[in-house]
Amino acid sequence: GDSVTQMEGPVTLSEEAFLTINCTYTATGYPSLFWYVQYPGEGLQLLLKATKADDKGSNKGFEATYRKETTSFHLEKGSVQVSDSAVYFCALINQAGTALIFGKGTTLSVSS
Amino acid sequence: EPEVTQTPSHQVTQMGQEVILRCVPISNHLYFYWYRQILGQKVEFLVSFYNNEISEKSEIFDDQFSVERPDGSNFTLKIRSTKLEDSAMYFCASSESGTRPPLHFGNGTRLTVT
Image 1 (cartoon, each protein chain N blue to C red):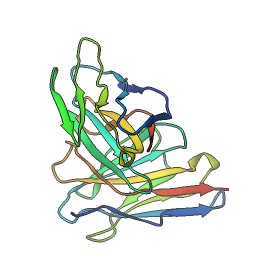
Image 2 (image 1 turned 45 degrees about the vertical axis):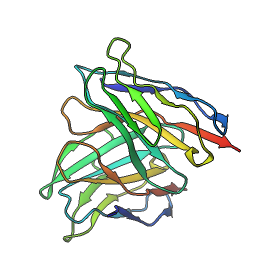
Image 3 (image 1 turned 120 degrees about the vertical axis):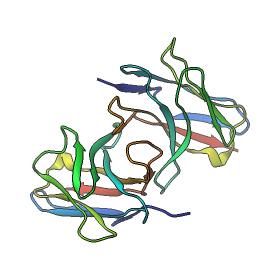
Image 4 (image 1 turned 180 degrees about the vertical axis):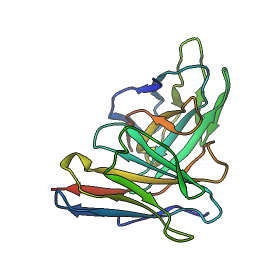
């Protein structure tokens, strides 16, 4: 079945460091891909998305490119801030289009 | 911006007891969902609900679970006889446009079964 695999956390960085959180997926066809973020004490929020191969989703300085050759959707940011500390979830929409399938989440901790 | 609200934020219950988790979806949304996350595990889909009936459910959503929209604003998840392994964070979500994300998620209810 469809699945999403994320790199294990936690990821600990200093402010202004470069961030990469790896995400790979297994799915039938070419599902839409998403990154969600959960800030402390809050719900899941959509960060960015890509709906087809080679699409690049971007928001708040974060980017991710849909790579069908490597079935990947890695999240990147050139310069992280303390306020980026959160849990990041990679997800895809299932083939039926009825449910999101999430990875386990990666905790990012940024210190000043 | 409209929000999905969930209550309570934390629920502690004894094994075998019934619990009801409550959600108020965004008012003009028509599709409602429950997801859960066991500590350290993936966020898992439980059930989707549209037009007053379940549209899809996962293997996790067995006979112990039920959902209801008792009035025009609330959407509830009931667990009839809780087990220790039901301890998790439960997220409610709603969507305006049916099966297409983005879904709007609530802050979650942490359920602890002792």
